[in-house]
Image 1 (tube, one colour):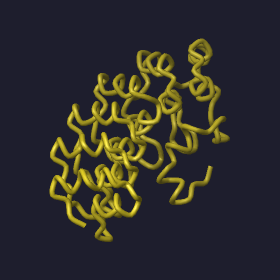
Image 2 (image 1 turned 180 degrees about the vertical axis):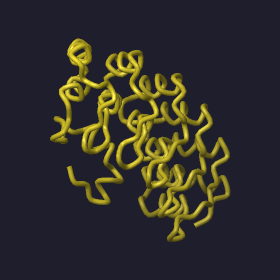
Image 3 (image 1 turned 180 degrees about the horizontal axis):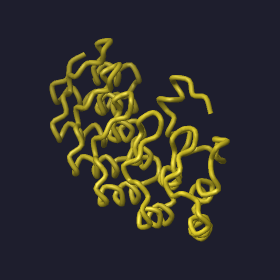
Length: 216
């Protein structure tokens, strides 16, 4: 699969929603993991497939189980020695993938000791993606484990609060502010969370930011 810059940015979402594996180099183990077939995964491993084999995008079977929300397969792979610190070719970790796989998998990975604030090659953390996606429960899990609420992306200096405000995710905006997020952080182009909330028409989010001292 060839990714444009935009596809790289949203690449994990693309993986999570793809009906089939896009990589020509995906092993049968990857396919079984993505489908959530524990018995097939067990058989592939018994037949000699390497548990940490990486396809052309650097994805392992565990990546696929996690991004597709296949908890039983993810747990089985971890119990059988799958590398929990593996990254794909763009620096995305299992926790980045888990944002799209659901709260249960996020908790599984955190309980296994996966680093909560690992960034991908664009400086994006799992909390950034959660703020963009709008999952309050996952946001609470990540923040409770110490994720940096003011983390900035490498190129554009985007923060989780900026993305939550842009998406109109009021509960996540409230959470981030309650944990001390800077309401006046600016992107490389000078936009604040308040500015983007106004542009996107998220009035209630904008009012909340104003009450906490936000400026355009």
